[in-house]
Length: 199
Image (cartoon, rainbow, N blue to C red; front, side, top):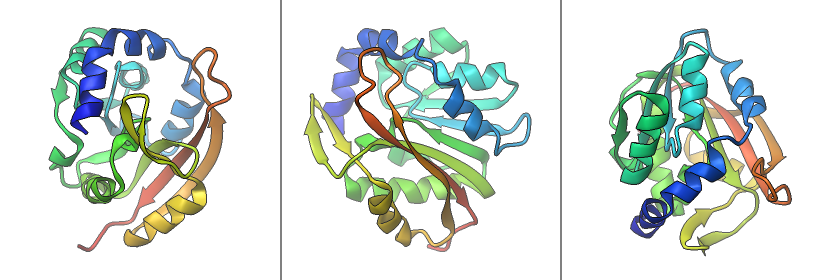
């Protein structure tokens, strides 16, 4: 994970310019449709702060965090709120959030780390709360372009989810990348609902 964080610290400006203006309202609104107005959201790996700012503008309460110091700084400047510098496995919240938004973020975790972090996410969301997560579509696990990726198909994710009996897939769909010139890249989008957990 350190190498991936180093990548984002080094390329923060390019990453922000590549993502901050990318239109993503269709997916954002699909997630928000499951939440009550004014709900409490964690933007888990907020990157440029694009989604945090969108949620704030819609009247939601948002906590934002990222593992890259450079992206935290950029997101703070863009959103005007405090952005916590923390790693995914440092999440300690318990039943705090109505929804967790993990857009193109936890996909950078190796499978074993992802399994542990998913438990932390399930613990952090309220009973009946929702988790959005997106992954590159496919079966690949490893380094690509200086960053680590764990890709998923729906079938692969269903197997992964068997370790979390209180979590169900509410909605899943495949989409194209919204960034210019990258529409051939496919993403797996998931909206999960958590009905609690027993560890």
